[in-house]
Length: 107
Image (cartoon, rainbow, N blue to C red):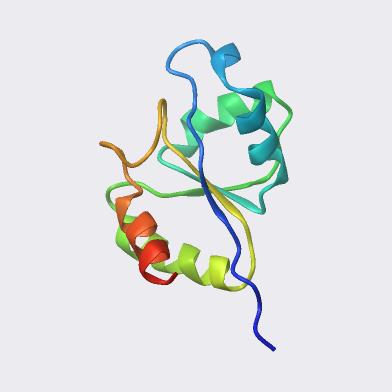
């Protein structure tokens, strides 16, 4: 039986005031199976602000190739993942590009 792929959400986080996050971003962070963060210590403050207790994993420049492969397997298993950076939208100058490319190449 083939499992449907999970979804990867690229979630923008506030630059500065934690109250600047969008309602939709908070809802996505609450409903995903896993949150992949550039710096888990930084993102924990945001998650605590909104009562989000989902599992958090690190995805940064020093582990992103290996971690991206692991995350792709979780997506293949049907899990949903939110990708966040410390502030702003991931992928521009933050870790996340290898994961995004792997997911795109996998269809």
